Amino acid sequence: MKTGRKDIGWIDDIVGALFDPIIVMSGGWGDDLPEWLRTRVTLERLAENIVATREGREITATDAEAACYLFTASLTAPIGSDWTEIYLYVAGNEMKDKMPEDIKVETLTEYQWRKLKQLKDWIYEKRVKHRKEKARGERRQAKEKAKTEELETMPVQRSFFF
Image (cartoon, rainbow, N blue to C red):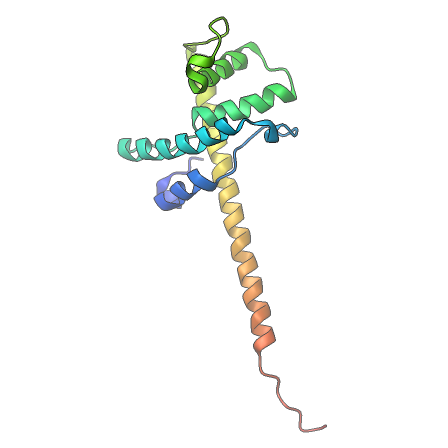
């Protein structure tokens, strides 16, 4: 299921670009993401929103987000050769001139492109799902708080019998 501007609104997409969590592989390695990569995630999310809006296409996760996920996945368990090449490709795009030449991957096969696109779509769907669940929880808390305040401020009917 694709989720885009029509479903959640373009303002929600901008807010999501700034505040959505970075999706990582479970296993406890998320805290080890370099700060410069976290910053790139936010910047690339904003750029992705602009480009997708101009081109009239669905928003997807960015290369930086894919690099974050694959970074934590590779620390959690060994990854196969296709995923290794995909990881080196997206990491090389993020690191630009800092990637050693002997491990740099500049192109992907068609199969690897499809896998990368599927990963980016999955990451974006997880981001949107988290955002919606968080909003739903906040609305529920607000309703409960309003109900509690209403009960606290209800006038107590005086009894005729003391």
